[in-house]
Image (cartoon, rainbow, N blue to C red; front, side, top):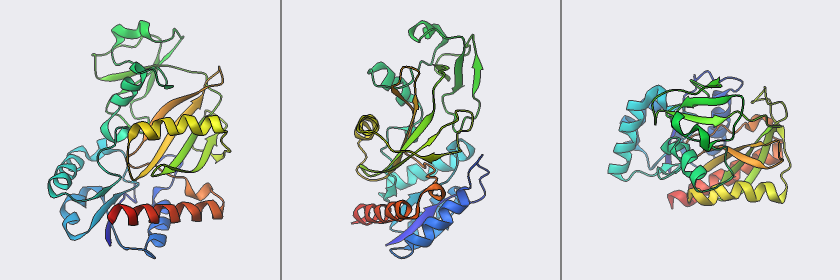
Length: 266
């Protein structure tokens, strides 16, 4: 099965090397598939020559929004399989899900998109404000008095959390977890052994997203009360931090990824 693997090898991610991860993954996937790499800006033009498109470390969509929208439209019109499938309800569809999950009572950092609704959030000295169409902390600010037009910004209480932790899944199968012990160093990660309660928390959002196939990362923070709260459900192009994993765990992830792709293309 010929795969078009979409990645931005030159994207300057803070504290991460996207290119190394995708060079590694494609070198291993070639044992299972015919693989060609392309920049996200070229995906629409090149995809007719492939059986499926795999979107990986392609960077924040807002940097190439017009090209991405054209790619999505063309892929849906042609029925081209895209991995992750374009039906994701998390970051793939924008940040509205944080508002929806808040309204539905899920364990998520409480979120509103209108300063007039600030009373619905816990009263705190400072709030995190970020563009609703943002990504990768672009445009993130902290203020005691959030302002701005309704519907354009997400507003959340600034939580003095103990640490952040990420859970990585292929399809609905948990693969590994990593955490950042120092909240000030988000990408200085170490392996994390989740408790059954931790995994139940993460699976809540995997189940909610209803993707049959794909790689997902559930990002959470440990609140002062001890509970986990969702920070982000990354279902478009989650960075995987594979270089931090023990070799057996990394190998198991690659095999799970390959099996998922085979099942996806069957």
